[in-house]
Length: 211
Image: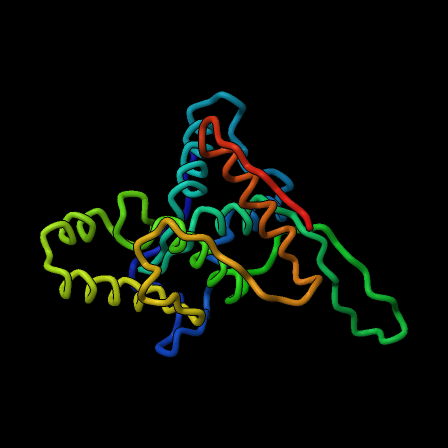
């Protein structure tokens, strides 16, 4: 059967300032692929094979949490199952830079981007929201308005985002617009959302427009 290393809740993922000090825990599958050139060593169709891919599908759908820190499902897919062209650094100034196709690195901006999309769509306390626990969702149903707003602030603070959504847009059902310069890799980031939606949502429809 497939086994994996389990990380305890006191494993240090971020420091007290919110700086990521061990983000590699979110890219274990990608790192395994780069080492071995395969994701799962179990025979196709075996119990271990089915266990591995069932687990990975759930992570791509519901996100992945380690040590109290969570990334969204789209971000997990991007880190582990999207390969991008990365410029490889070289110490030889006379050599031209080369690009290698490999999984992306964990960037703070990507963490904020994928959470911003998730919160815009599902909010913080709806039944499909990834930011809150089932207990928090059930508790919110019985809370008066001010207490519910305070709970949302606590959930948002737990994420430690650098780009913080406006309080008026935390209930979901919203769109998102990103202002940026070109060549920042957003085609890859959004392609990951498209492929992940295709793999995790039955009968889904994804439309990509260019203007």
